Amino acid sequence: MSPRALRAVLAVLGGAALAASPAASAADAPPGASACSGCHAPAGRVASPSIPPLDGLRAAEIARAMAEYRSGERPGTVMGRIAKGFSEDEARAIAAWLEGRR
Ligand code: HEC
Image 1 (cartoon, rainbow, N blue to C red):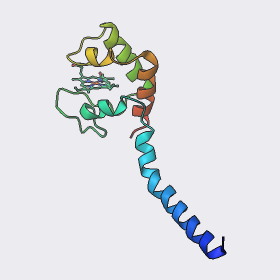
Image 2 (image 1 turned 30 degrees about the vertical axis):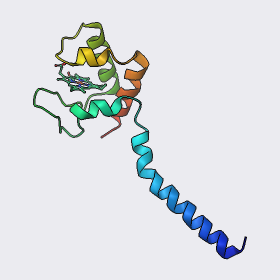
Image 3 (image 1 turned 135 degrees about the vertical axis):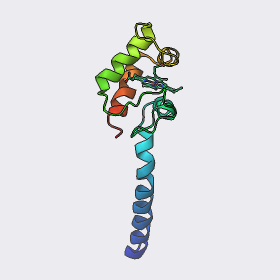
C-alpha cells in the first residue's frame, strides 16, 4: 500500500472512531436503565410532578430504594412493579449508572 493510500485508510478509520464515540456513552447504560430515564429524566426534568427526581441520590440510596420497593417494604404506586423486574445486580448496575449520569 502506498503511503498516500495508507493515510486515506487511517483517515477513514479515525473518522469512524470519532463518529462511534457519542454512541458509546449511550451503549454504556446497563440493560433497563433507559426505562428509568423515561420517567426520571436527568436534571429534574421528570415526566410528572408525582415522580421524584433522582438527581443527587447516591447509587447506594437508589439501589436500597429499589430493593425496598421490590420487597414491598417501601410503598409506591409504580416503583414496586418496576423494581420487581430487576435483579439485585441489575438494580445496582443501573443505580451506579444513574449516579454518574449527571
Ligand atoms: C412509570 C414511571 C417510572 C419509571 C419507568 C421509573 N420510575 Fe422510579 N419512581 C416513579 C414514581 C412515581 C416514584 C414515586 C414512588 C411511587 O409512586 O412508586 C418513583 C420513585 C423512585 C425512587 C425513590 C426516589 C426518592 O427520592 O424517594 C427511586 C430510587 C426510583 N424511583 C428509581 C427508579 C429506577 C432505578 C428506575 C428504572 C429501573 C425507575 N425508577 C423507573 C416513577 C417511575
